[in-house]
Length: 432
Image (cartoon, rainbow, N blue to C red; front, top):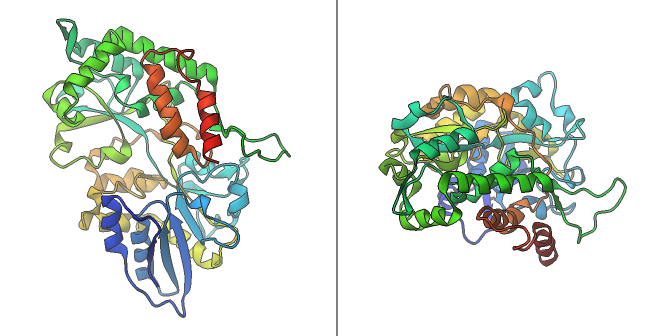
């Protein structure tokens, strides 16, 4: 039996590398075998590790980009580990796993509280367990670390003030620029989240059936408009205009942001923790970072990885055995050590590409493997609560939300461009 079944014809280079490491043949004739569906290729290595630690169960891993779209009563894995699992269909597909907690089982205290809460339905029953998460950050030259007021976080106001002082204009154009919100559409989304735009799944009224043509996404329109106004004012106040901002980008951004920081052309660049710790060893010593925090809130990127046991799992005892093994501090330490010793940590950050949802792993074990994190962990009490978002959020975000935010952030009014609600409705209609 093949440990890793590939459904995608083409993998990224990273996935191909992990696939090559993880493929093996095992004899499972007399062993209880569970199947895991995942959109994280490194889970194949976790399965291989589990298989080597005991002889009672075996794991088979299947890669699929959107596991939740393939599951049915007749076609179900024993575990799913992926993004986009928490939505209106969660109770339809996954088992209530309240009984996985207790004496000689998992303790709720090992998880970050708000991450664990994200896996509950109506604050009562646990259907999903958080696996990993990421947060936004800004990187800058280590030589300029004393110019920031806080060792851990940076606010919008501080970014603006540092940029104002850093900017150099000559002959009607900028030759040096601190930062622009227009450089990265993911920064615009983070700003919208922090300003209260609150993108979330639109659930039908209680007792009503979901209509396939219904817009699956709602948001706070007033907060979104405030965000657009905030970004437009930022651009005009600090960088003169979106046109001068774009002229600077066109002239200098043929180099990577890391090189632009090192040369002094820009001060900040936006990134996320999933990318931050994959920077090359040549670049890392030259850069520093701060987590983005506004009004004592740090947003968690919406692609948080979660784990669930489907209702139709055939080997639920074995599935629980894997869950108990995986959500163990020593297990995750060993996985991180294996990744480092085999240099896989250069391609994958942490557990499933992010910080571990186990607080002691992230706060005590990660700094061993990522020394830059020593004393620099995001303050967890500031983590924002996560909204329920539709299962197709990834596509809606990339094809609708981010393009819309980019257009509006460049100064176009809502009356001059195709409205967001109609864009979402059109996308849903064409992609049912």
